[in-house]
Length: 383
Image: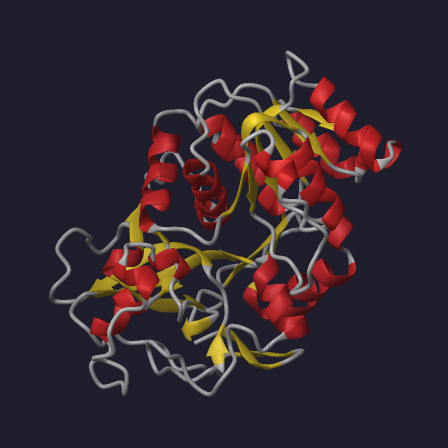
């Protein structure tokens, strides 16, 4: 079958002869891929990896790390295992891609089959599993292909008369944002600041609206991304027009009462955005880090949090609950698929995915939000 395969740092290969996956456990389903989005994590793995691909095989699945990439998946079920009861052939589905201790049961022949769950999985937080990998990122083969095989617990059907299959492929990044907003405990009507309006920042806007947030403000230096955020109905500010101290005052002044935001979501991962995320909060506000940071320290003053009983927390990956709630939000009209569709700046045939997908995002990133790959017919650029 067709596939884009990771062989190592800056080493991707398109092939038409990658082995087509088979169902190997009764709880698995086989999915024919409609679309699969290129994620920032894929780009980082390509440039700076191996990260998720470190080591020869996966701790959970024992699959080798020369692997088909792609984890933002929409597709159609073509085959189901003997123990699958809630899914059926022909259903349109999206895939929650985390591979964790909860998946060990599917791989009884692996050396670690009987290994106890890590603390996170034991306590019910498998999204931060000690051994986490993703479908298409170190766990098993992914969605830059004709087909993939996944466990039934990772599959959520969606109504294809409401959600187009290309939009459905963005359920994973929307679910990442949904998880951040859900776990930050935002209440309807509360104000929120989003720092950065790249793909995840824009997804945070969608998730905030889906949770009935009040005023939403986006801080973003790039004009094109501010304009895209404004099309989603939020206010924006260019932080480059202020000093760091002035920017915090300007942000607080944008709230209805001038006291600051109930919540902030750092989607940029810079010292200046971290500081703004904390200092722009009102008393008892919550700053949630969604960005992936470099492993470097920054200056942090604990009393900036203690004096006003603020909370600083983080959000990592997703759970199946987030996928289910995102699909339900579409059904209830809390998420507009037409708004999500505006994130798609290009759709590319899988064969062209390295040159017109990966390299396009790396060298012309300001021209794109999300590029989707598909093994189906070729597509015109939709930018």
